[in-house]
Image (cartoon, rainbow, N blue to C red; front, side, top):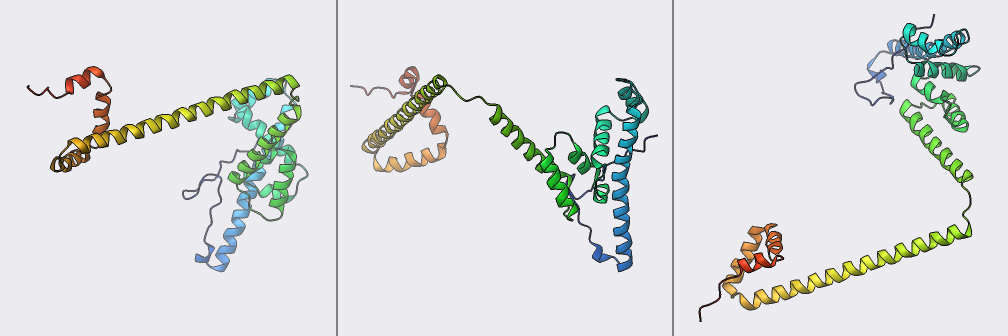
Length: 253
């Protein structure tokens, strides 16, 4: 029968897939050595369980017809067909590998054995692990994701057909039209900015010429208090009807 499926270890102080750092300095020499040995045994047992379960599943799949295996896995092993596929891939990949593989976290094994992982990336990660480098599940995921993206991009470039002369000419025309459009938009923006600046200068000249000095200080104080509401006043004067309604009454003759 397939072995029990190990649950992934978690830590309350580290992100999933990251390595926690345990301080063995707080323990005695003998106790620290025992705990390190126990940790190695536990990691090996978890990885071995995944690999051995995958081997059992591979053997059972050969005895069942298409469709029966997935139904049996879900009903009897209480795992999804995808999990079973991951375990079988892990077992196939671990075959003939060094003992180091049996000490890896299950999540790292799954990522390294995934069919979508580029072979050169797989070899590089395994070489680093066998050299003693700790590669967490998070690190493995990022490295493999980057490698997959680079492989897909390279494949697209290889299969992409070269452009014809007509296509290149059409693309150049589109770029030229877009460049002219952007230049026109920029000219209009600069013109509008200059118009607003001149209008502001005219407004300030108008106010300083018509507001007495003492009232000017009050005017500045009111503007400061009004804050963003000044924008709303400007919007009111954009509408001719509102501007007429707000205009002061004509002086009596």
